Length: 201
Image (cartoon, rainbow, N blue to C red; front, side, top):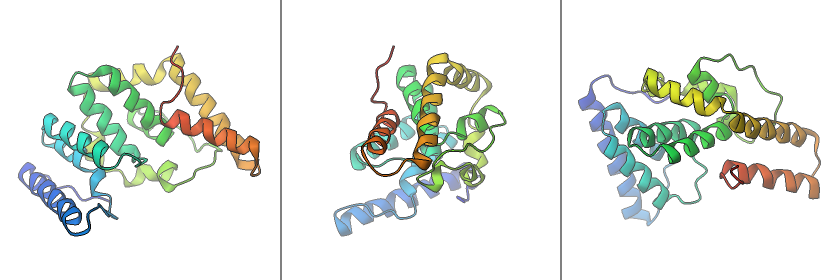
């Protein structure tokens, strides 16, 4: 679990350490290794010190530097919050959907809903309910009442719930579906949903 200082000055120092370490990787190897996932915490840490521009720059850097990275749930959730605070509500909503697909338990947890363990296939630990135990509570406490109200409205929208229900249904089918054309098609559909590649009605 990430240890976050309480002193904003120490958080800023932590940010500088992470950024220096990532820059050093690029300078030495011509690429980022980042086995510890520092890239996922830059945006949330900037939000913790109230630097929205810093958070947005960190997410822009992430998009440019890791175009094929699948991201991490708390990374997406904080990204959605940064976009909301920056006034880009449409993109913030999309990031909230990506958060939902990346971990089906995180948004209910944020909103105080009791989401039991789903009978679905998880391809990584980041998708499981146990992932919630490793999220720094400071990142969840960033959300104000108005911001939670907005997230609740987006999450509770019938279109969102329809997408969520379909995603869960596919994940359940994948538990017993053997390798073959049907499984491949289901995996492709979930991949499109995770990348928000679907028709918006």
